[in-house]
Image (cartoon, rainbow over all chains, first blue to last red):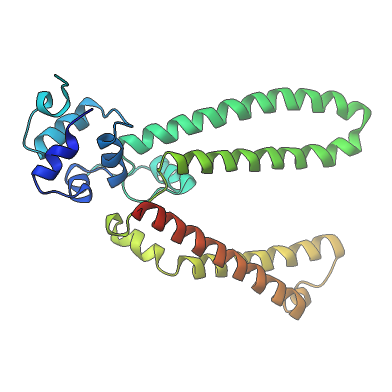
Amino acid sequence: MNRVKEFRVATGKSQLALAKEIGVSRQTINMIENDKYNPSLDLCIKLAESLDTDLNNLFWNR
Amino acid sequence: MKKETVTDKLIKHFYGITGPLDEYKRHEVDKIGNIAFIWLSWTLIIGNTIALFLAHRYPETMAVAYPILLEVILLGLFGFVIWKARQARVSEFDTEELTEKEQRKLQFAGLKSGLFFGFFMHLWACVMDVWFDGADFLTTLLNPYQLVRSLVSGLFFGLFIHIIIKIRQKHSED
């Protein structure tokens, strides 16, 4: 389970705002948050940058 | 942002995608397209072979039945594509997410597609009458019965498109 939703809510962004920021659709953010789609590394990096965190925090399950 | 190629535009139009064709949507339509392509390829390879053999014995029946069968198979395949695209949520859209051009296109989309459909159905019916019955084109074009028929078919088609758009919008909001 990734922590995209957690970080997105913490930064006060809506799914649509985040989607627009990284150039994807809202449905894609929704799918990633619900673990129904594994994003590419490129998209993961964009997400991490936009949510002001790193890949470990966002995707690494410890 | 990366500029959309003609292929991207075709994909978006075919699958009813609005907004960006991002990696998730591209991945899903690739998957759906591949499944449809595999089924269609095998159907055509096997179907054409059978049709070729049957055509020797029943040429007239095959000349009529096979194209109809192909149309039915294609319609079934379109149904599958629509169902899978809906399941993968690639054809959903948010009004705020659309570009200005897409928002303009969406305004009165039902009315526009109804008019377009009605007009072309009318023209098509007239051409068919001229072709098969040797009727006069202008007389058929202005035939009140034909005009009403085209108007009604356009109305129903427009209504259908309007409902489809509203359902997609509602589904996305949920």
